[in-house]
Length: 241
Image (cartoon, rainbow, N blue to C red; front, side):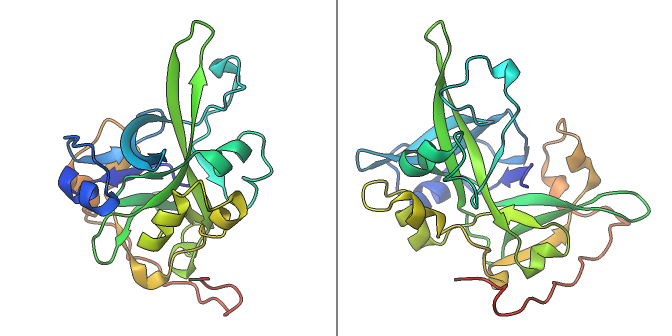
């Protein structure tokens, strides 16, 4: 599961990384939470766009959002079969702008311990996403998105069994290519990222409170536990990159 993430690079850094024409100006966010607006990159009619969407996917066929659960993640293993995600995987893929995400390790004397996961090279982290436009009965529309998840790599498996699908630069191009890349080919891009891509470090427990959104969240508490050692996986279980 991916339930919190952070966006710290400059707007220009993201624009250069994903080659969209829009020139948005937005502040750093250190604790992005479900139901909040998230920035995504879409590709429509051969043109990449920067778009704000609600983090919480609503299929077009939902009549009343109050009767539909909050869906923030889409499991890639079942996305092609699920009515909620089937069409989005084929026609409405996106990349969620992020620099990293948080995950929690259960156990310990003070309960769940948060960790921040970033790219080792500190480049933007391209999170695979799916999006859908939901229309209300009065005709108003809202764009909604979910982050795609896959099984964890050895580094992340020590704290959680799932992780967001992190795309390579080439993977971004193919993920956003709805014309020539079908749903099955797109799903194959969503694999556990190589461990060498990432590093994992303790974060502040204040990230548990969505009211906190400051840079200090990426710094560990004084009594933060050391990162757990990566789980060793067999060749058959390891990354497919």
